[in-house]
Length: 355
Image (cartoon, rainbow, N blue to C red; front, side, top):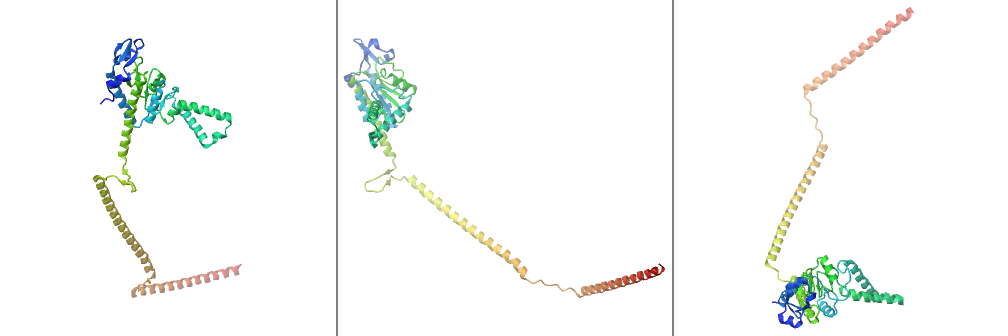
């Protein structure tokens, strides 16, 4: 179902384009006719394009992305600011700061500086400054708030831009195109729609026309945020009631079966471990008994007396005979030695006499 109808767009003056002499030939597919030197936009095509742009904005919001609203035209400032604040989206309604997207880290530094000044004012350090310094800081804070106050919560680059007049916001279009950031824009007959991802052919000068298109985009973003909130609530596995503990949501049958199987497996494993421990203990006891027996055996051997074996009678007699023979042989030898000594002495005496 379309988000708007033909009559609503007609009443808001969305169909009025620019003068024929100012037209851009690339907008020809969206022009219905010429009347009194003014191009008339085909509202049937506008309805289709509005739905496409609104669906894109809804999906971005549902995914938790940020859409930056850009409108510095006098008749669009307040309308865009109110719509963006209602859905908590950043917006730029004053001068577009150069390098807002392509030099985003520097812009973040300026935002941090503004936050630092706010902390100084809150903790009392601002009062310790000299009067002249306080005046300078106050002016600096006012300037930063005017240009960057609406994007203070933008911690990273936006996922898309919504622009009211691409001819006036040419710098924003160039930066977004360079960074491949999608653009949703109201495009009049005098503009080039080539760099725009979601073209909304419409009158971007009339306040009623701007208000209608901006409201449709805002409502689409609101729908996306609500759907995101519902999905998050469904994903939460616990529900808390008043004065009760947190109770888990329904436990599925498959989950119960898994828990029972896990319990059985753990019980079987514990029994196996116990039996293995018993076996190990019994083996240790046996090994200790064997060691004690081995220690006892050498002690018995030492304590037991050595039994001498009695030799037979024949062996004894043979040994005695041998001993007697040995004694006799020794006596004979000693006698022979004595006789030799006597002979030697007898030979030495006659020699002495001759001399």
